[in-house]
Length: 257
Image (cartoon, rainbow, N blue to C red; front, side):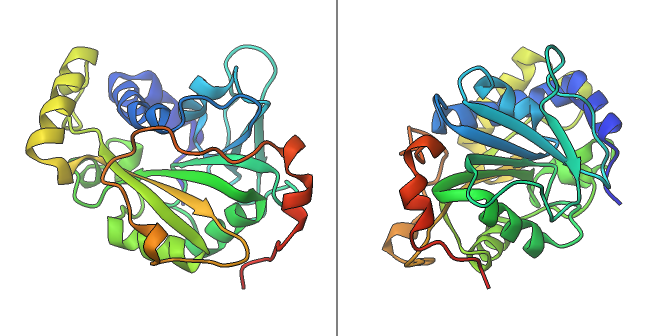
């Protein structure tokens, strides 16, 4: 059973949640410095990770599975939140240019079905980032935060899952080196842990992030283009917006088997 959305919401309003989103967003916004004209989906409990892009993107939607429940997002203005079945979203094929998954895979009933649903709604050459609890990180060892519920992941596990779902992992990072205690998650304290952790114990961040690309036509998992960078940094070539891809999205489009 998934962690309740109201509990996750309380977490992100507290110091530990603010530290988690801030450290992950350092990576995500370096990778995607802007989202002007793009259509973006957040799946799971992804509102904190969509917030920097909301004013730029042409469309942002935060989808929450019914097993988790939902809270309104954003706090001001009209709601951009949708609620529905875990692996059957109400969106048409190839609608989104970018997808962010957070609090999504760890408690999914079927990770494979969920990833294939994300493949369906992502545009050809679209990009998806997964923010997940890292198996080797301290945050997966305690159930005092949402990252301690469900299954944490290693890089190898995520690589296999993404490849099986016809995604190509292209960039990796770890974040959140502060221990999962309130005193360690103040703004300055968490930043200090992050700076030290990246240099001293880079493999033990509490979160693992992976960017993956949806290829259509020739799928090349494990090929020369699949060599992963060690960090999510620098600007990646964006997927095109829907208004520019009507022809491309109709060509060579196939469902994963």
